[in-house]
Length: 357
Figure 1 (tube, helix red, strand yellow):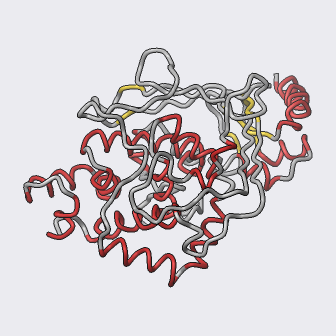
Figure 2 (cartoon, rainbow, N blue to C red):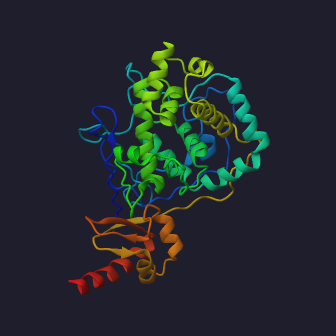
Figure 3 (cartoon, one colour):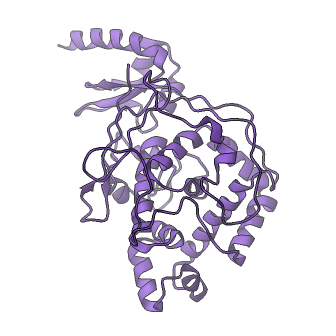
């Protein structure tokens, strides 16, 4: 059964209401990486796809008619889908496919924190991230965003998908509820799609690309992601500059933001050159395969587990957006199941529906 995942993302720009499009046939995911590592450059400015050496450039997830690998229909702003290409910036140039940044004392200091003081913690983050990195990178690739942006997740949540801040930000990308809803994610008492690594990555990537289009700089886009675009615009107007590092030097941005941007850029540097810093790529090949089926009536994951024999914890891991472990009433929900369990589930679900009618 082909997996169908339709997700509507509303861009904050262009009256905050234009539809970016939808992913269809987005799953049956089988992502794996090569254990060979390409040569590592020590330069801060990298070439196209600077994280390919980490994720395995020769084993990219691709489209296939059988559906056994990730099938992704690229997203466009309106119109009919087209194959992915660089998304134009405000000046008409393609988006940079990697983040270029100067050698700055604040970045150097944070690299030292990651690679010397907390190398073990960074390795734990990399181990925890391993299963998510292939699909997240594929989403960024499809949308035309730099894979370097995965460093945002390392900084924001340390790849703990269910972490929440005191201010209300949650999930891998630490999106605020209002921002998440604006980006098309469902956030309520039953479903919180900020916890979903696929949907939240797509929303965050669209948001970051939108900020880049507004400011024309990845440093400023990251600052706006952290502090809000209004705060960045106000600082730029007050200081009469569009140079993030001038704003940083003048203390024009909140302290948290002045720390956040160098943290992300330092994480980019460490991830690009992970072996040089003593980090190890996990030795196992991540496998995350599932199919989605529509469920139109309230149903608990415990019931699905009993019907299929799939451990409850596995179903929770595949369906992290279900806050209470159950599908609520409404228009239906796309439940994720291991492919081998789909037929058994559908037979049991049909009997369940017949009894209720």
